Image (cartoon, rainbow, N blue to C red; front, side, top):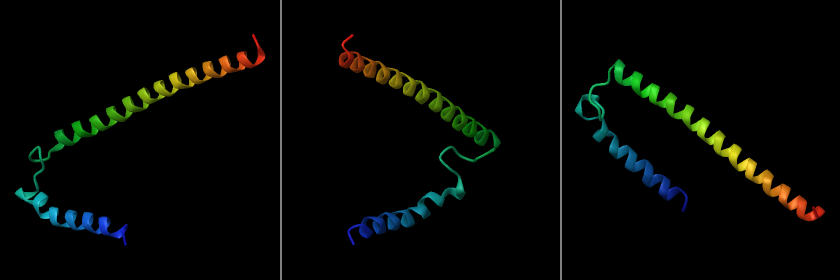
Length: 81
């Protein structure tokens, strides 16, 4: 019951909010949607995910390098060199 109560409240709030968002003849926050808006939004999504993948891959590479260096230090301590 504790799990169902928050879910029911969230669903009720979303159902009650739909008419507010559907007002103004279906126009969104930026006004009437045309091809230019859709094109720029789609381009933004593509650029965001491309940059996200590149930056996260670079971060992962740097963290892997630090991990390998730390393992090498631990191995040298164990061996005695």
